[in-house]
Image 1 (tube, helix red, strand yellow):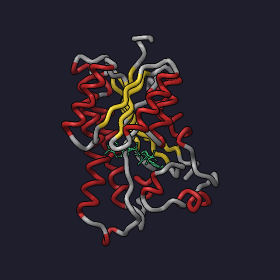
Image 2 (cartoon, helix red, strand yellow):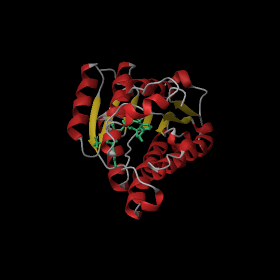
Image 3 (spheres, helix red, strand yellow):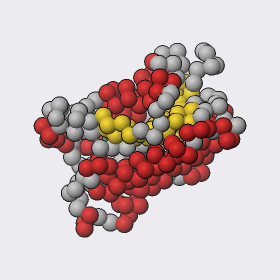
Image 4 (cartoon, protein in one colour):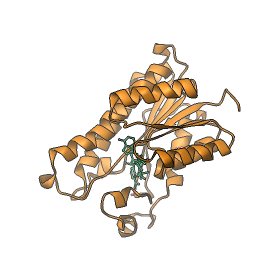
Length: 251
Ligand code: NAP
């Protein structure tokens, strides 16, 4: 065990894109904290895979929209893995396909709580640990946005698209705020990626249905998104901040 490995916290890291990021980050030398809200067992399995690669790992349960739970999660990372170098704000949900005139306030509140409030809360805790302003030693934050932020997702989930657009603007603003404090902040905007998220929104065939609309004529994989995320986390992206990187097959 090398105590000098950089440490990254990945929200929603037990499955889908987050799990792919956890595996690739471990393969590239990161110790990894894997967060889940319901699927702690999956997060523990990913943490076991990380340990099998010779890195340290922690599975930690928290709802990213719950301030007290987020604080407690970061405190556990401090205690069990040490200084934080990276944060991936990946936790996310979709809801069933609806028009805006059919949506409830409760749906909008959940959508914005998880994506926007969750990203803000975790970013604040990370900055308090990474920024030179707070005696940190620098770091990198990657936010999972979506191509939906520029497409709007009409008839599907305009609320999700708008929450992702908020994440884009948050990324631009925070990146410039802390650019001189050792912290880089970027976003990745995936297109149609083959994960469980589509089934969770009641559209298990969405990937197959949408693939012909993608210029590359196929969905992307979680691993293809992870490549962009882990690159942005790494020192190879040392002059990249405030960027919104599309990983969409041209869509
Ligand atoms: P996924 O397979 O459905 O996984 C979502 C992850 O988010 C799960 O690990 C889940 O944890 C976690 N999560 C949900 N609510 C949470 C909360 N309140 N607190 C903490 N964790 C929470 O989704 P995915 O496709 O990998 O998506 C990952 C990110 O990429 C999301 O932000 C999504 O919006 C974005 N994205 C995905 C696509 C796509 O086509 N797949 C496209 C564009 C953007 P549990 O396992 O505990 O439930």
